[in-house]
Amino acid sequence: MASVLFSRPSDDVTLNYLYYYSKELVSVSNSLGHKTINKEKEEANKKIILSVIEKQKPEFIMFNGHGSSEVICGHKQEVIVSAKENPGVLKNAIIYSLSCSSASVLGPVSIENGATSFIGYKFDFALGKDTESEASPKHDKIAKMFLEPSNILVDSLLKGKNVKRSIENAKKKMAENIDYLHTTSNFPEAVYYAPFLFSNYMGLVAHGNQEASIN
Image (cartoon, rainbow, N blue to C red; front, side, top):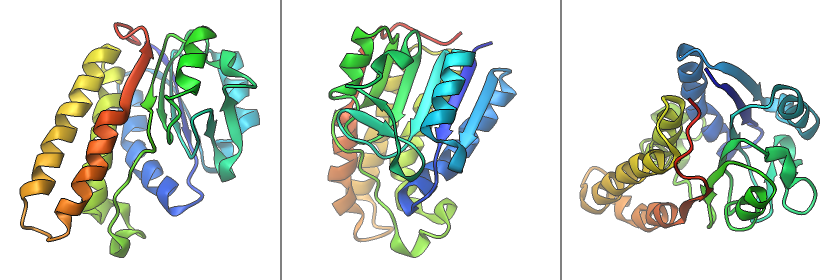
């Protein structure tokens, strides 16, 4: 089984949603017998995450966090990986970065520096939310439309699907959810969220070896 690292800060509302949804993925990883290393909240900082990568050499890393085209951040927006400073830390790993725009610059640079595959978003990752449900993400039906496809992607990777197939599975669910948002009458504002989810659909890309898998 593979060595898997999760970096899961939760110090603001958006990150708390990502934190909540990725709990399930940590459980899946454990149930499959992977060596699962879960660094959450304050432990999702640069010192700890880079130490784990150096010592454990995980084959798959999921980063939740804020970021930009060149960086992935952790707890309290501390930069963990930077295209200019340390892209080589991702060498020999499959990366999934749930972080705004990190696939546009950091993704290709990480591949140039030895990463196996970098999956992420070349645009800002949009997360629709119901403001009345922010204190309880599990009840937020809008956020589910945006984060369920992300979970499908990682679940596919953890179960041995390759990068290309995992992205296809995620995009299939995105397309279903976009169609639902365009047609549902369950809540009248749904149609306004569809373009943001479509942006995620168009922005989800992979650099490097798309046939790579963690098993």
